[in-house]
Amino acid sequence: MVIKTAAARSRAEVPDSPPAAERITVGLIARVADELRRLRARTGLSKADIINRAVSLYSYVDSRTAAGDEILIRSGTTGEIERIHLL
Image (tube, rainbow, N blue to C red; front, side, top):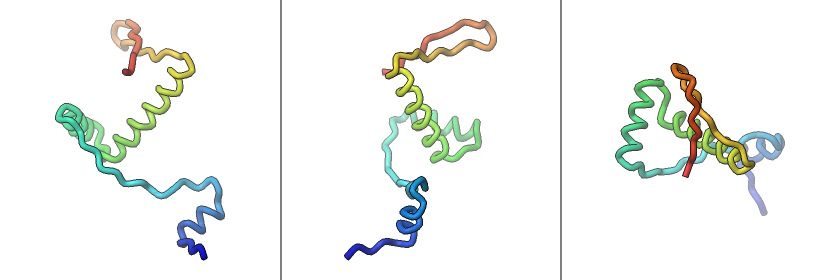
């Protein structure tokens, strides 16, 4: 016998509904932890929001570079263009 929770039943009824949030524990190196603190102070976003945005951005960049596209940044002051390489 299979027993579904109310949340599972409601997701089953709506096939495009997103899954429940997943909790993870991540060990950050000191430099990244400092960058996360600075981002929180500058943006006012939560750690979860910043990390969710970072993963979404990485996924987008990864899919574009896998398709052969390049990621470019243009300086707002000099107009200089820099190609971004993620390793």
